[in-house]
Image (cartoon, rainbow, N blue to C red; front, side, top):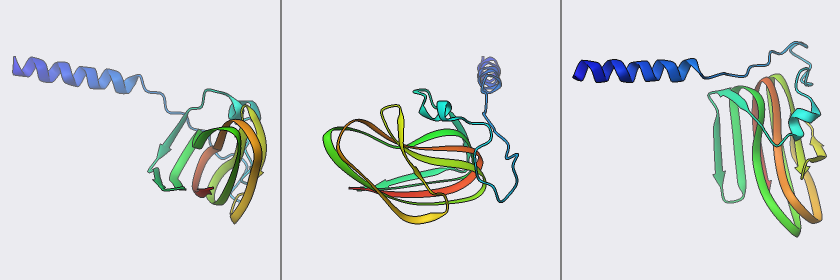
Length: 151
């Protein structure tokens, strides 16, 4: 009986891993060009976001969020909030070491600001804003780190 349970658990594990699909977008435009080649603005603004990553970490302490990964492909939501006639100031520092990436701030399904890659202390302010706020990173085999402070 013990052997049967072990075989059954192994079979379930193998079948579940075989059903996993990891999304990977290769960097096709060289080491110095970080612009996206495969992911589109429609992908970024979609309500459905998927990604795969290797060695990723996200920390949230008070109003500061740090996110990094050795390799990420797809679209991640770094920060989300609902505002109702409110103000939001976001300060972002980002570094992309390889791959392709785009870091955007959205209100609803609209991109309202693109943050520069490999730049520190970028500040963007939303005033009297109502809607779903989302900071998203689109990556194609991107090695990156992003830190943002929300006020």
